[in-house]
Length: 280
Ligand SMILES: NC(=O)c1ccc[n+]([C@@H]2O[C@H](COP(=O)([O-])OP(=O)(O)OC[C@H]3O[C@@H](n4cnc5c(N)ncnc54)[C@H](OP(=O)(O)O)[C@@H]3O)[C@@H](O)[C@H]2O)c1
Image (cartoon, rainbow, N blue to C red; front, top):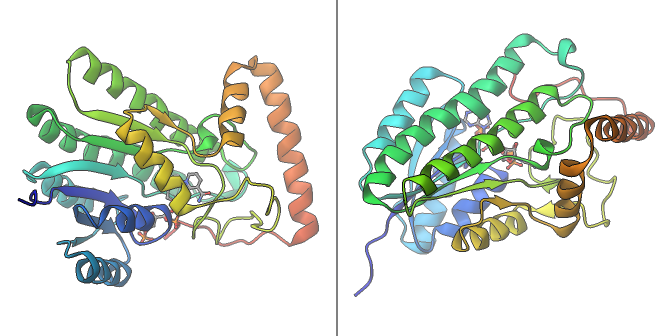
């Protein structure tokens, strides 16, 4: 007899890595697709329901807004069939910290930190007493390697990895079967860089750029093995290992040199785009 489908909730499901998670999981799970762009979510839900017989549901929410997070929290807390929450919604910033409106930084902290805390709390209260399921927090290689122009981004992604480690220890101490993962991708083809001064041509063919599908495959394989950290791509695993072990002074001088080289190369390629993703 076929098992009844359980539910996976994905934030930032309207594009990139979130949509790739949805496509990968739809053959086996019902999906709760969360993001701001209603039309995108509805199109994806219709496609997946038709193709795989999933019962995908759309929850339109701006996760920087408390009332919208409240609705997502309620849906996740009350779902008796929830097995996985993927905290994936996120955006990057271009340029020095002080040059961007404060609201952009506040929104980034609301989205990467506060929404993650609130949704994870709701999901774990639901999952831990059933002793099943998991949480994937989509952080970044930027949690290990800082760059000029990325102060809030690196800090919030670093927070995500540390938060996930803390959850891991809590769950382990409680003898729980619930699993947590910090997924730390490097450069990934998606809409993420559309408004950022990052050229997809630079480093193309070097193996540093990965597809969203490759990132998702690594994450799901890691989830089956209950891996706490998943860093897709061997190049990034080496970088993360090296940067984690370097003395701070050496690390900062390498990060500074890489930032200067990157800015120089970008200046030569095109003038920086002034649009800011996530600013509304
Ligand atoms: N691409 C990379 O190179 C890369 C590398 C490392 C880590 N990451 C991380 O991977 C995650 C997914 O990014 P991606 O590469 O797939 O980029 P993407 O294609 O731009 O997707 C970002 C997703 O987040 C959603 N989102 C943004 N702001 C939101 C808000 N205020 N409320 C609700 N949803 C919001 C977007 O949906 P709406 O616009 O419809 O709301 C979209 O679905 C992010 O956390 C990012 O930091 C990406």
